[in-house]
Image (cartoon, rainbow, N blue to C red; front, side):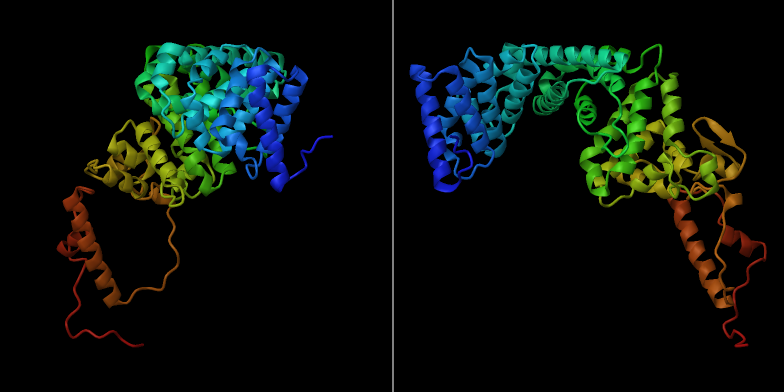
Length: 478
């Protein structure tokens, strides 16, 4: 009868007995296949809670699990041991270096060559955990043990099979998707921690694009960037998207905007689905990749026009102050100053600046000086002279379109649609103070080059439309 339900000292004794039994089996092969697998299954259950399971996480325990995982001729035994090992490396960080010290990373790389979802998931997970807080030599794994080649080959298999699922409208095996997600997470980690070998993973870009286009967006109510879509986006973060090999698949000739359309749809859904607290970690990479897709697209490509039209405020939106509606451009503008998600705010600012072709004047015209100013000053980008450019002449520009209607350069709103709250008429003293304040502000803006038109207060004085109050003026109390 199984004693898995035990806890405390009894659990510790049971775990000690199992680890000793499995260690002895490595020397004498004293256990049958069934007994060995049963012992590993019990150990897996005990290991889910590290309390009173210490023997699993010791040097001896990790060595025993590693040898059963990578030296056993039995696929079942190997996978059972890998599951216990993965759980140990997840729960107890010290076990990761113990695994690396054994020198079995090369055998983990070898397992990646198996066309088996469980082996891919488990071996990839072991390598993934070994990238945290250990002395693992990733460059050596890539150069001598073909880590990059094996991962790219696995992504190619996933792309081929998931494309078939999409074509036949069938569902992929859940284990297949779990293995894919794990491979993508390892890809991101390796390219982050070993940037000198990023070129070895460029061949993965076509497969990642195929997967992004083939996988359905999760149904309403599910997080849009749940695995594997989120990890697919993240995996592109460190890859060289400006290479010829990458560009040929990012902008396919038959549908050059297809990837941009998918990513922008995900961005739209993500801004509705995730809280402000989740934006930095979850949605920032998506904004960065869309920015890169725009930047690396050919100048005359329809991709750029599509992204501009999707992300920049429309003519219709300029009937109100920009950033106040529920459209995707409005929500992006609102997030440029989101204090709860500073990383996402920066990513959105860079995205909209890139979509404005990194032209400060276009940037101000597109989103209004109120939103653009912070980014321009923070990045030491000169403020364009003559704020709003063509807007001062009665024109506004958006995504290559123009209107002869004048635009407020600060808010981006059409001037003829601005409304003002009913306010009690100012006293003469209040009018004078306000005129003086405006004069000072306008002169300051002229010196900074923000505006290049004549100060309207000075002009009013010159034309006799503004008179200072006499020193002995007293407003009628009536």
